[in-house]
Image (cartoon, rainbow, N blue to C red):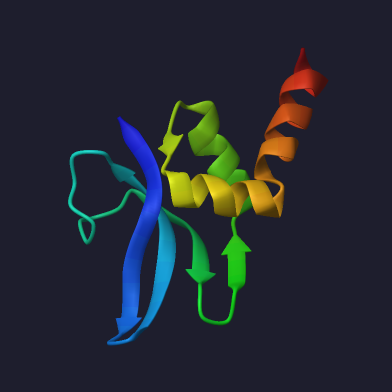
Length: 88
């Protein structure tokens, strides 16, 4: 099973996170399938690759709670809902 989750980067006391698609059995710093975004909680910046996130969600990937909240705030799920209704 594939999950969309945060991968810690940055230095001590100055964490930034990559949002990655990764196998659920892998550890936090394990090898990811694809980088799909970036999140900086200190500066509150978010950069998301919408097509890549939508691709993995369509294939059944499960976002973690934090990634779900970040994606929801950015409007990823509205885009997903729009794409599903458009093609049905």
